[in-house]
Image (cartoon, rainbow, N blue to C red; front, side, top):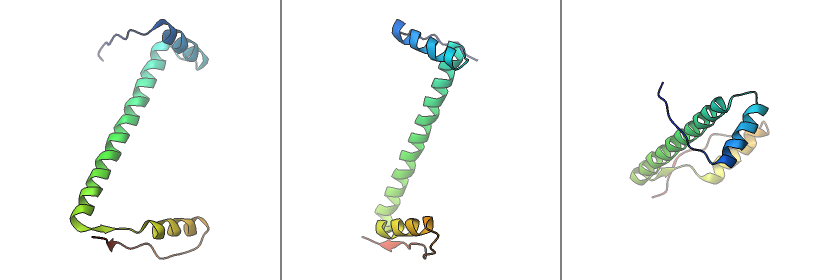
Length: 93
């Protein structure tokens, strides 16, 4: 495990200390958890953006996509227990 030093403004250091105590953690554990959570959130976001870019490139090549109104109607019906046929891909280009 590597050692990293963080220089925090006094006001933030106090806030972290209060919250850490309230959650039964040390300030160190609180900050490690916060960094882990933010890292995971950013990794998920980067994966989401990469998948969106891949989908966009695929659409640009094929012109195939689902009609948003059909997809929304399908999910609304599903939530109400109504069976509808799944939406199908259509050529839009």
